[in-house]
Length: 147
Image 1 (spheres, one colour):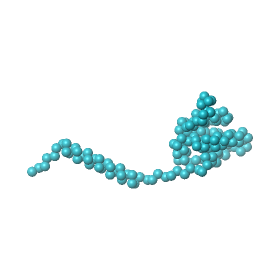
Image 2 (image 1 turned 90 degrees about the vertical axis):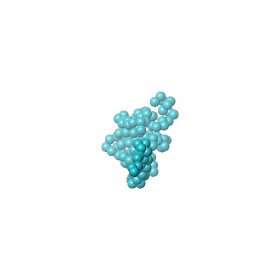
Image 3 (image 1 turned 60 degrees about the vertical axis):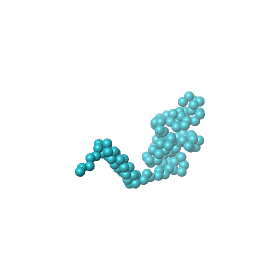
Image 4 (image 1 turned 135 degrees about the vertical axis):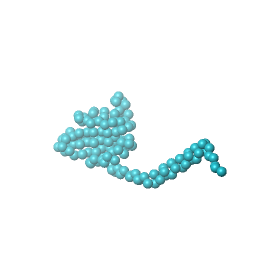
């Protein structure tokens, strides 16, 4: 005597095997997947060195605006710009992260999840306009300015 299996029973057994197999494989992949490393951020949101790409990506993913300010110590207006950036970073410490880097020339780059701005003409007005465009939660002053 032969046991006759209908197509419906065969398909049902096949789908049960497929579901159980995929569950087992998924569980095994989770066990052997490398653990994600904790990204250690600096204690202060104003630093004098560059962030690692992982730190920067983490900050951007969490709604922060990262500012990179390179300047020269002999530049008097650069020190004023640095003071302005530090003041804004302290005022909006929950949204801004400032990297101050000594270099031969001055430049300002701001990055957020809304884009990137490289400022050539670093004025107070240009800095505030760029921040209003890039911050995740711009302050009420940005709305009043019509930005």
